[in-house]
Image 1 (cartoon, helix red, strand yellow):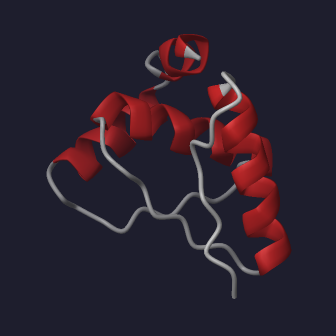
Image 2 (tube, helix red, strand yellow; image 1 turned 60 degrees about the vertical axis):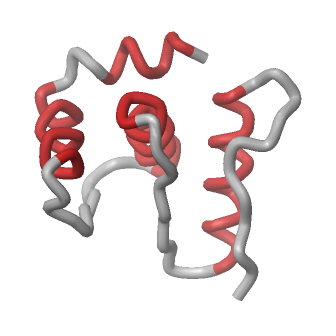
Length: 86
């Protein structure tokens, strides 16, 4: 949904993150955000940069929840995020 991308575009931290990714200054570490806010930034960054994003989590259960959150944000009943099992 475009709503998530538009909301993120007004956040200085999101702007800084996407600028760094845009110049290949990666990997990016996000701390201090709740899981759903991390998913929001990841979703909006993938849409903003129009390219895939690889996310590494601490355990498979977190990765599964992240995939679910990202797919819900995409809506349309399509898979946006894919899980690479442990």
